Structure formats: structure tokens, C-alpha cells
Image 1 (cartoon, rainbow, N blue to C red):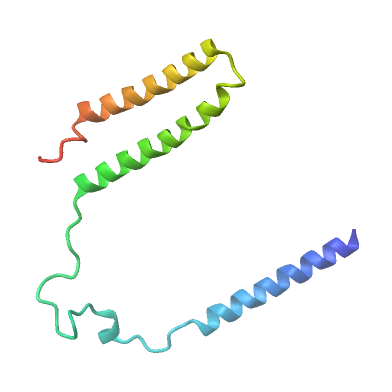
Image 2: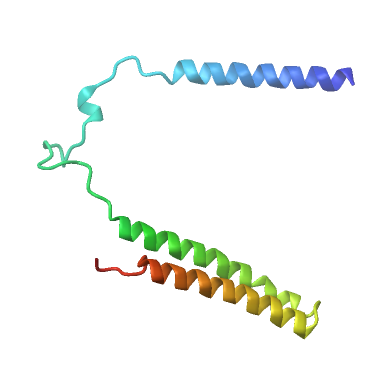
Length: 117
């Protein structure tokens, strides 16, 4: 038991020392204003470096990711068809697809799928 405690203490101290050294060595001593400013091919920018982000595109991307993950949850259902009965398989699959369709209808009803606003 004492070996485990000693090993844990050594591991903790070693990782702490490495983190402190990394923190001390990575600090910038001089903050250069020119290096932190945006540029266009070496010239001063003509407009703001921050472009406005389309919130509608972000919402469509999030909806795509959510439904994409749900499709990957549908794939293992094919494997379970051999284990379960046809009635159980069809009920679970139908319930899952019904929940997906209800979510799609909700997004459509809220107007999140309308691209042109």
C-alpha cells in the first residue's frame, strides 16, 4: 500500500513540476502590437477583420449534426433484429423514427429550416 502512495506522490509531483515549467517557459515577455493585429498580405486591412457570422447557417449545421447523430443511432437497430422479435423490433424502430419526425416537424414549425428570411 505504501508503494502505491509513494508512486502516486511521485507522479503528482513530477506532473506538477512539468506543468509549472511549461507555464513559466511559455510566457511571452514582450507583447508585440503588430503581430497581434490582423493583416491582408502585409497591408493594413481595409475593413474589419471580424466578418459577421450567419446565425441561420449555424442553426442548420446544428440541426444537421443532431439528425446525423440520430441516424448513427439507427444503424445498430439492424443488428438487434436477430436478437429481438419482429414485433419488438418494429415497435422500437417505429417509436424512434416517430420521435425523429416529431423533432423535424418542430424545427420546421419553428422556422429553423427556412433559409431565406
